Amino acid sequence: MKHLVAIFTMLYRKISLSLRWQMVVWYTAAFTVLLVLTGAVFYQYLEHSLEAGVDTDLQLRAQQIAAGAVISHGTVSLHNVTGDLPGFGTPPSSSPIQSVDVNAGALVRLLDAQGHLIAQTPAFRTLSVPAESITQPQAGTPWQGTIKTRHHEEIRIDSRALRVAGKTIALIQVGESLENLHTLLHQLVAALLVVGTLVLACCAAVSYWLAGYSFAPIQRLAQTARKIKAGDLKSRVPVPPIRDEVQYLALTLNEMLESLEQAFARQRRFVADASHELRTPVAVIRNTAGVALLEPPQLDETVVALSEIRTETERLTLLLTDLLTLARGDEGQTRFEQETVQFDQLVETVAATLDQLAAERDIQLEVQIPHEVALLGDEARLIQVVMNLLDNAIRYTNPGGQVCVSVKQTASEACLIVRDTGIGIAPEHLPHIFERFYRADPMRRETGGSNSGLGLSIVEWIIHAHGGSVVVNSQVGQGTCFTVRLPLVLST
Image (cartoon, rainbow, N blue to C red; front, side):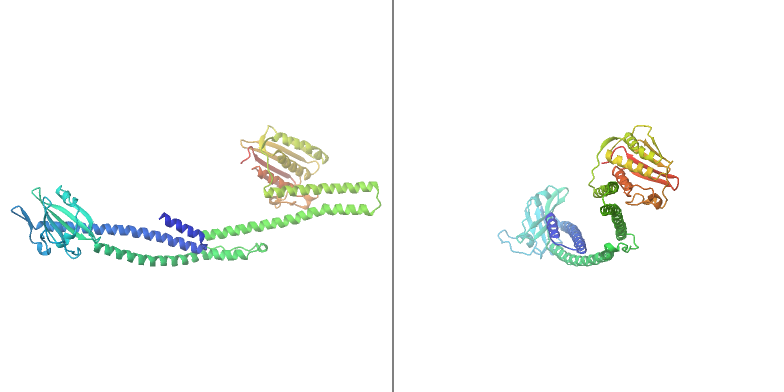
């Protein structure tokens, strides 16, 4: 069986079949193994039952013959049964053994208590019976066994003792050929092979039809999905009404198409916004340089032009740096350090750096850090997070307002809260503020500065890379609050 499985597996790997034919092959192979096992068990059971029936018949026949045994002057003879046993008697010792068909005559032999032949049928003369068929009944235990003739025919023999008053007076041996039984079993095997072949053929046909019927919805899904191109991502595959694996596949494909549509939309918007943001400083640099070259060179005007060019160049450099950071983050090429960071000192340092900017805008910057907070993370990236959040808070807070930054610690995480009393964010813009190049409304754009709309995207990316989360709450005209939660230990 192992060799057959190995051969079948090797052929299966070499032959390229469609999934439909693979199912047919596997189903047919499974039914073949099942039929073979069932047929083998049935054959063994039937053979055992028929042989047990033969043993029972032999035992009854021996009992019937023993009932006709008569003892006269110490000699045992059979009466009332010899008519059913033609040729039953003792042949002359010099007579040759004739070839007699064991299937044509009865197989009966009568022996005395010492195992000497008293009488036997002609068919029994051709048999060579083992010695234990005599010694075992003499010991008081009946013997049953199978012997073979010179023509390799199997004969079932039953040998038992004839006892009177607890004393063995004779041995009776009866036999029956198993040729008819084997012929019946061979005919049964032939019939099972024919029926099994027909059943397997029907199984293969039904399996092929069922496989086609089962894969029909998947085929329709594949045809629909093939029609959907990158420019037609709004189309969706049909969802079958029955809740099965095909429906799950259709829902999964539609979810994938929805994600692809959103990804393509974000990509198109990102490319358009990036082009717009890059075009502005490049245009300013070109126009400024062009004007400076057209007019007669004057020191003051040249200094002003170069100053404008430097400002736009710095803005362009920052924009390109942010774009490169996000691109590397999308590709997973950025490596984050895992080092112990005194987060409270980091926040205080960043706040001190931006305190001058807040003072220039007449904004009060308050820092609240009651306890030391240490965590594992990338110090440079965490500085970027705090810097962007505080810069946004100062930028979008009106003069006379207040920005408050606080740090807290729980058993498993550090919490950074940046709260301002600025212009706030409208509810419809809150879900989009972490999108790249997204700036909420014209009112927020009028605050000036070189903000490109990538700061919060970078903040979210860094926080998520640290296994943390960021939440924003805001009300228009009252201010905004960013809450950042970072695990104290980076998850691996």
